[in-house]
Length: 190
Image (cartoon, rainbow, N blue to C red; front, side, top):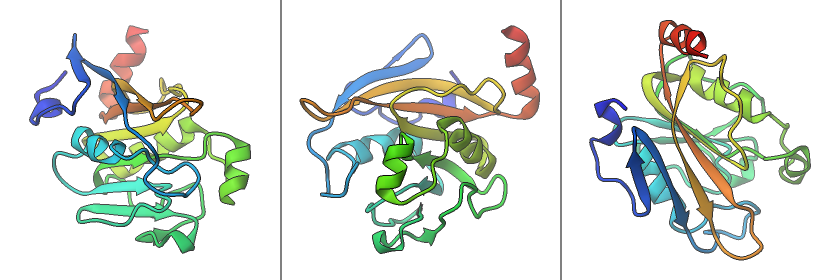
């Protein structure tokens, strides 16, 4: 793992082992009454892992308020994001952000509940990688790790996110955006 990954202290219950971040975060109850809201201690930890520097895009931000250095993007204007965007393509130029993060609806049923279009997890990572600068980190909160073999990203780690009995266990997949030339070498390696 390159040095940029760990120029900061890791959050509690996060381990760096053999160049790979992993762990389990017990994060408590949701922060808001909004369906799918983050557990209480998730967002501070996620920001610590994803964004030790620079500006970050937060797609499917729900009720998370904008904060310095973080642009919130959501299709629901009542949640008051920095940018309202209902589409499946982010309204930003390539390589705009130092880091990016998304917590999309996990299924077509969840999309209906939010009144948002369903976007597959692989397409979300592809779009995040488009708007993230080379070397920047990308985070995806989902129920599984999507296939990314054809995307210019390298998986840096996966962290399990738990918030209580009979609740979905989610995964935070953390990637680094790589150059296309680096991607070719990953494909060749199998």
